[in-house]
Image (tube, rainbow, N blue to C red; front, side):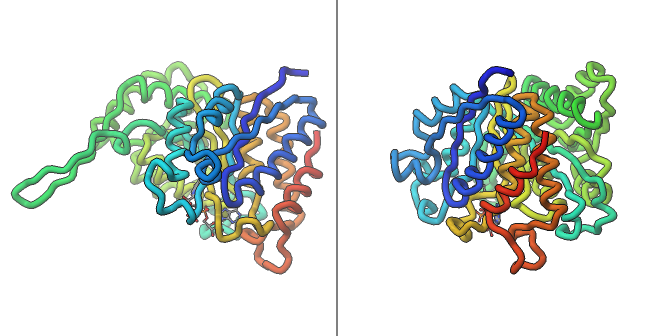
Length: 359
Ligand code: NAD
């Protein structure tokens, strides 16, 4: 039996608490089956923290996260906080927590489950076998560069600057090579090296690091081409690594391959093994409190946590297989159901997955 792993659990707002409750059932079941030990500590974050503590990211929540080995986050936000000043908005808490925890990469797997191929807008034969991971740089690039406006003879001009230094590129590219090494050993580095200086530096750094990973097949893909190839040959990609803005766009495009937002997990990582794991979707206020939310994205986020932070590949495989078997048996929450009258609820989906987890 291994050491006790500490998990900070942050349910958040809207459907957050509903989907996190199902993920916690999965945690408990894997403890029973595999003998792993988890200690969970709950904390307030987002809108609920604004209401109860006057700030979206209370200091004690940050401390709970800092003491933990990993964070499991539901979702934050809702219309009741939309008109608040910036410092009292749930989304400000999201940026704050990523910064305070030193998270510099965002990982988004896009896996097409065979039985859900019809839910995608792409042809099933194009999607066949798609299982890729987008690794996006999270702290640099044009989103964080200097921004300003100035007057010119043609009226106001707006300027956004894009900057990357070698260290920023090295750490994310190294992480992506390591991830690829544990998967199908293929890495696509996406840039715009034909026009951007930051991309040319990016490519140089990738080429310098590549010899350390001779078993990983590397391709450089221009971002516009990558956007096309994701729709033409998604199954040929394994790991895609790219800078902040390209990653923002490509990870959303890759997400749509799978058909439903209720199925998408994500991880944000920093140095070492620490990570924050959360579904890609938001707090879905339109369906909150009605047992309608699909808990699979959050449950798959737990599998990702096991794989990336704890190295518990056996339990991660077991969770992913359980999800696939429940879907293959025809069970669907309403977001992925063709016949909505046959749809099951959040709790029922969670219970079925828990029951299907096998050692
Ligand atoms: P959303 O992802 O919450 O919802 C978009 C649509 O998808 C809605 O129709 C919703 O019902 C549906 N949906 C989302 N998750 C689902 C699930 N698990 N099962 C079934 N259906 C699901 O995005 P939105 O409506 O743009 O945002 C709502 C709130 O969430 C906003 O306050 C936004 O700021 C916040 N948000 C938070 C995060 C986060 O916490 N990381 C991410 C995105 C949006």
